[in-house]
Image 1: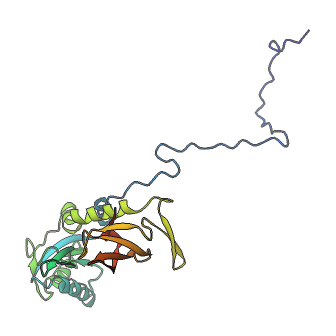
Image 2 (image 1 turned 90 degrees about the vertical axis):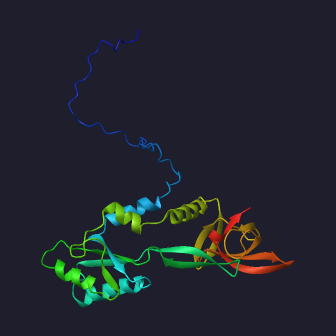
Length: 261
C-alpha cells in the first residue's frame, strides 16, 4: 500500500539557499524585446528641423540681427569674429552667421548651374551674450562699429534678441532643404539590400549597380536615360554613359542627380 504524503507536515523554511546539484543545467533568462525594439527594425528617420532645433537649444548666448550693406554680408560676418578677438570680447561673441541657399540658375536658355547665394540679403545674425552689464557696452560697440554695418535691427541703442522660434525660422533649413535631406535619407538602402563595394579599404553599401539604367533628374542632362559604368561611393559620385546623337557620352553625376527606372 502506498504511503499518503499529503498528510505529512512540510519542513519549515530556515532561510538557507539550496544549491542546485552539480552538473545541473543553468537556465538563462532571456529578455523579450520591447515593442518597436525588435532586432533589425529600421531606426526612425531624423527630422532635419527637429535636429536643428535641438542643436540651437544647446548653444550659449542669444541671436541678434545686424543690418549691413547688401553684398557685404559674409565679409561682415568674418570681420565681426576678427574684431571680437582683437578687442578681447571673444568670450561674449560666439558666432556670426549668414544664412545661405542653393539655387539653380539657367543660363543661355537651357544650361543649368547650381549656385550658393545669401538667403536674406543685407542681414547678418550674431550670437552673443549681452547680459553682463560690465561688458555689454563694449561688446555692443565692437559689433556696431564693424565696417559695412549700419546698425542693429530694432532698438539701435538697446538691441533685442530674437526669440528661439524666430532664430530657428531665420537660420534653420528651408522646406526645400528639408525635402532634399529626407529624400537622401530615403535613398539609403537598408542593410543587405544594396550593392557592397570596397573602396579605400572600406566597404560601402549603395543602392546602384554597374550596368543599371537610370534617369538623370538634375543638371544639363536632366530627363535623359543613362547607364552606370562606375560607382564611387566614397565621393557619392557615379560615372554614367548618356546616349546623345547616337553616341555614348560619359558624364559624372552625384547619387542625388539620378533616379532608378
